[in-house]
Image 1 (cartoon, rainbow, N blue to C red):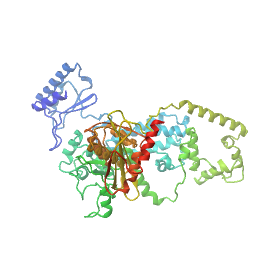
Image 2 (cartoon, helix red, strand yellow; image 1 turned 90 degrees about the vertical axis):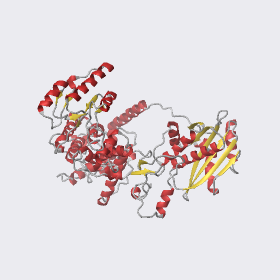
Image 3 (tube, rainbow, N blue to C red; image 1 turned 60 degrees about the vertical axis):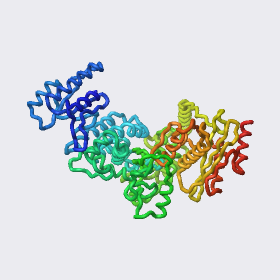
Image 4 (tube, rainbow, N blue to C red; image 1 turned 180 degrees about the vertical axis):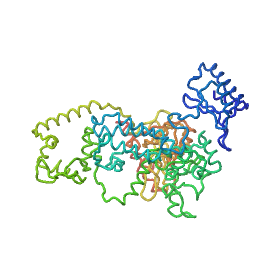
Length: 637
């Protein structure tokens, strides 16, 4: 159908909609099972569309569903022509398509009214759950997996009004603390403190506003990093035809979707930078391109010593590769909502840190990583947060109550006293005594608790799946006949230097070549490992070895070589070079543990002893031969 429509458009039978002077006309958009067609409101073009649909039906064997088909007209079409065209099409006429794929197609002045249905959907979900039968651990799971997920789809495209997001968070808060209807329940910990991750003492609930910004910034990233995509070409042609996304201004007639995306552009600016390939599109003084500098830009009209240092740490590719945009806060350079959300929450926490007088020194992993039922871990968290119904805690919240411990009567009932210091608590802590006035023998409760622990451990044992971890070489093994095995490794030195080492051996374990090189720079470990592999493969090709087996003890490098993927990062630039070099030879790569890579590692370590590149043919330098002999002896054993 797409080909038929394009052909009709080329032959001027139909004319698509033109949304800007720099945007080509759009005649159709296809989404899953739906098709949107745009033509002029004329008899000839409608007949052209009907002919195309008829041809498609005959060719495909599919039939157009007339009951689900609709037509809408622009406002300047007279009613008589609308009626005539509708009769030809036999489609249902609508004023506008209210929603498409669950999202509004038209947004007026009242944003709250448009998005209020999202809040209603969350409320219906929360209302339908029987909170009385759920522990707080269960409520946490439902909030994170369902209540927080409902608005996500709309958040990808629109900036949701704060009143709607606040309303959703209020409903989640009430559900979490067990509040129903108009009743009021104590919120023992401020909701804002629950945004913090579990390892920092919170519960990892989403800050909906920040999450909305991170999702919208993903759309901006897609436009920036993939300029050839259809949506990027359309939006660029309409809103910023003569500049870049990062420099574009918001026009007065911009759609709400575009305003939402542009509002999140500030998020993108916090972590996006250019990865230098051939350098042809990098503006030295204007673009963000220097890693580890504030805003990734130079601050003066000349380079300082610090800036020179950082620039020298950018690896130079051997082969031509275009400059590209990367997201600084992920390993692969691709923007992720999680990394942007974490970046924004850290910034917010730093902004409010001056107002906080307490710093948590608790190792919360001891709570959350314990092999205990979730509700037990939740109670432990509440106790450590002073969020249990101890009398002292209730009195602090303006409740008129005697703070004396009802069990021992000797001290104020704080959370610490109630659970640990009280003499009765040392025997066992009992809710029944406080709330029901019943006192049971401690041995009875202990026996019940031991039984529950046994049941839980049995359940854990039954649910544990047997795993078969992948086996890797832990000692050096010879290659097949006619193949040279290349082991490469890297070492880092404290004096802003890194070392590269490699050894090449044949079927019987004889060394055919070895090399080492010391470079100035402060690179990340994975980049240095890739540099070592690139150096080893280049030396191998120069020496005439083109049937090779590459071995590395860097699992990340192994995975990228195996999948033949090179991300737009410093690491990816070097991987790209390795893949280019590999085209010149017959090769395969695999991972080896450190024990099978010892010779290359020792070569990398001694590289700092030399001032220039060193290559040894059919031998290794003094002191390394012992490690070669160890590898050979291991084969005999």
